[in-house]
Structures are given as structure tokens and as C-alpha cells.
Length: 127
Image 1 (spheres, helix red, strand yellow):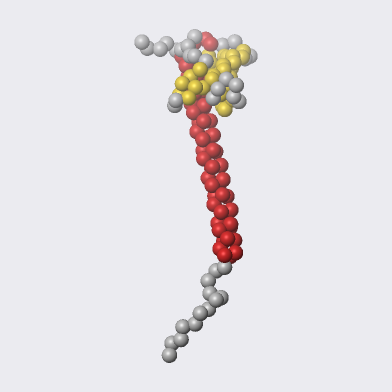
Image 2 (cartoon, helix red, strand yellow):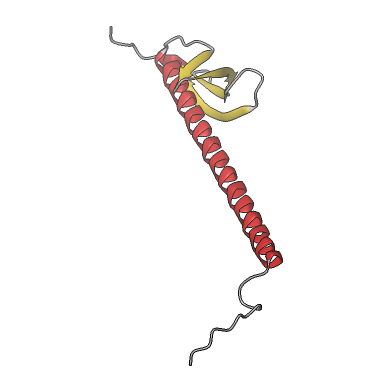
């Protein structure tokens, strides 16, 4: 007594499926864009962190009197370093400004200001 009926209204129409796929595509593109932005920001943070390390190393080298090149290789990249020395009111104290960029024509990623005691003439490096 079961009677099979042919219901033509069951299921989704082609238009409904296309609309659902369009909504999913827009969501996927938005998710990919957000992921790309996040990766880019993490890369920028990494570059600024390494630039800070380069600046800290340069300041330490200046304090102990070690000569350093203008281009430093760290973590497989070339970092340009510009050091500016400024006199202070104290004749034995010198202000040092260190700017670090990823390449010479690139913007500075990090700037560090420090002071060097000129009366010490730098610490002696053990040999």
C-alpha cells in the first residue's frame, strides 16, 4: 500500500546552488585576504625585531671600540646601518643615533639612541 510519489518540488534548484556557491566564494576570498594581511604583519614585526638587534649590536660595538661595516648580514639579509654622533653638554659623553634599514634606499625600520662615554676610549676587547 505504499505508493511512490514523484515529487518535483524536492531538492535545490540550480539557482539556489549557484547562490550558495557565490556566498562561499566571497567568504573564502575574505578569509584568504585576512590570512595574507596577518602573514604580512608578522613579517614586518620580524623585520623590525631583527633591525633592533642590529642596532643594539652596533651600539655595543661602538661602546667597546670595535669597528663595524656599514652593511651587516643578519639572518640571511643585508641591513644598512647609519650612525650619527652628536656632542652633548658633557664633553665626556657623546650621543649616538643608529638607524637601520633593510636596504640603502629603503625606509628606516628601527632607530636607536644611545650614549657613549668618550673618557673611557672604549673598553678593551680581549684577544
